[in-house]
Amino acid sequence: MTSMLQRIPVTELMPNASSRGPWTHTRAGEPRGYVDFQRLKELWIHTGTACNLACPFCLEGSHPGDDRLNAMKLDDLRPYFDEAETLGVEQFSFTGGEPFVIKGFIDILVDASARRPCFVLTNATDPLLRRTHQLLPLKEQPYPIRFRVSLDYPNAARHDRDRGEGSFAKALEGIRWLHDNDFEVSIARQMDPNEDSDTVENAFRHIFRTNGLPANLAFTAFPDFGPPGSEDDTPEITETCMEKYPTAESQAHFMCSYSRMLVKQNGQVRVYACTLVDDDPDYGATTSLRESLETRMMLRHHRCFSCYRFGASCSAP
Ligand code: SF4
Image 1 (cartoon, rainbow, N blue to C red):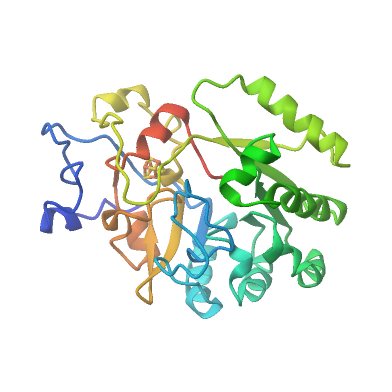
Image 2 (image 1 turned 90 degrees about the horizontal axis):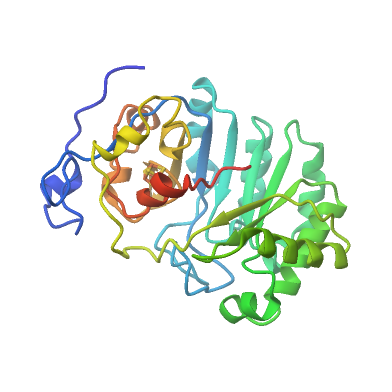
């Protein structure tokens, strides 16, 4: 690992670019907490913010036809896949938007799963169900493709209120198709602030059993991250706060210590710190994977507080 690059953060050129203050210091002037990169375990690919659904809580602000983040193409990704392989990457992971609305997504998966195991976040509704005939041959690829499906609550009416009528049943259909065809599948659910997690997950397990699914599907629970550009009143993380995570080992749960995410904006692929911060240009100030790995990530974004407090990670369980 080479020494950290002294890049000039966007917000120090444009001091008002973030309401949370400059890159290196909090609004109160204290040095910020930071995470240094350790190794490239996972390369995430943001396939774009187009989605077939328009959930109001979406942390990406995705909806049909949205282009805040552009649709990724295989030609955009090949050089990054090549470089990631030389850096020892262990997995390629995909998020959106809804990856299956992207025209060339199957071609991307074919290329990626010839190189490394893949992991796809999906709502498992119509865009996936329409492409099952293209997914089946991918079982013969050198590396497996796993899926994580969003199923917000163990309550169809509550899930459908934001995702649209019939979405819960469609997602269950998608989960069942994936399971029946021997693809590994897990669930992303939403976490209520004072929930009883055992009760929530038991309710899910009852639904799985009554829908012909194994009751032991794995879960990842996420707090509400807020839409892009949003702020909240989470505390800022100082260097002193990070004394809670004194060693590289204790910092290893922060995604920015082991992953990066490729995002296409205004026709240009950029390398962001993690899957949670694609709305702050300071976290994606380079187009170079190597340069990004040499950049110290300051914990300025309000979503960094979720990592600090809950150990939130988008990675597979
Ligand atoms: S959101 Fe979490 S993983 Fe991303 S940069 Fe902040 S601390 Fe790191």
